[in-house]
Length: 517
Image 1 (cartoon, rainbow, N blue to C red):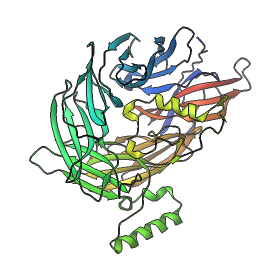
Image 2 (tube, helix red, strand yellow):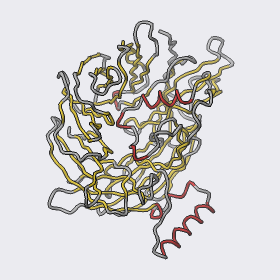
Image 3 (cartoon, rainbow, N blue to C red):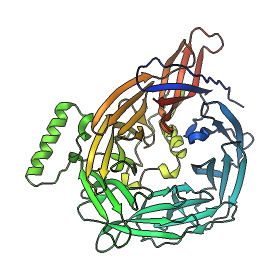
Image 4 (spheres, rainbow, N blue to C red):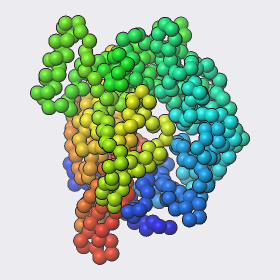
């Protein structure tokens, strides 16, 4: 093993007077040449971390580690991977983590699936014969099946693999050619949803399909979209009060920049669906990330356009993460971001762990994401080098599709190499807790509907009294919701301790358990 493990797990009373307590810390030493880990919260089962070691002396080797809820190692294993296999995606379901590989580059090539029990580290392997030239876009696991979504000759296609079987089966359902898959999600009752953007001669529409775990089509309904609103993204919910919900962003004139958000309430056949669009000017807190004078000028301009009956043309890049059930209806969470583009082949950058090419870092981070987390191609950010985040917004919408309240949290000092959720949140009654990692700090906020109850921050806790962070690598790491009121904050930094003689300086992956009290 090239790794030297340094583990510190402890419980202490935080010096902060706020709501947040950092109760446990895990550290894993990282050498300059070592690849980066992916960190996955697994609920009350703990945390799973994994990486490709890039050690090909005896075939490709992967390292996978499981921690319990006190961040103590449960097991640490090394996986041998055939060097002909390319990593395609992962998912975590119940007590198992799944790694999917495909042999070679051809889309018709066979697949290899590895499952690992989070409880005891037991490894099971499956070889999957494949004759479907599927350009993969989404992956999701059910209890005993894997569902893949993608395109065959530009036509959306779903395939299923039953654990222990020999090959894929095509999931029934008619998809229009050149329509776009924008969401694939598993539901708590064992079913799964697919959402596509489709069109015919008359109109554009969103189509929701819900399937049983064995691929039987249970529900299919389309939501018409008018010519004025061009849908950019969609996230579906599970069954809420007898209906499904789909939320996302829309634009005008087929722009890649969002002009607002929408919520569609998809009802059983025989009842009228509800879809309502809300421009950014409808939100009280959308412009809070701006300086007050600029926000006032933007609002005044939009008000004048509205009074003249003109289109409200303020647009932004907005990534909508989820729609969930709330007290009055539905809670939406999204983030404003800016994609950054740089000229390729401009050399290397020093990242605190040694020199490394930014493109190589970005490619590793993208490869470590599951396909279900990849942004829709309608976001048009495939060529972006990295992303800067400006603000997180939360919006509650009632059962008629109208805004009840909205709030926001300004995001500072956060850049990522792949488009992902930065601010994590939990909701208890009317209270929403929001948290994110920024450089060597944890920033958090509690809101009660449109009122801000608390805004605070505290430094990342370190294992030893005389530890000091010398450098934080911002290209990877973030906050993640874990379970209950618990989160993890993780990343990489260089730590100096002038008192210790043996470990004066160390480069580490760190994971901090953070609890909202």
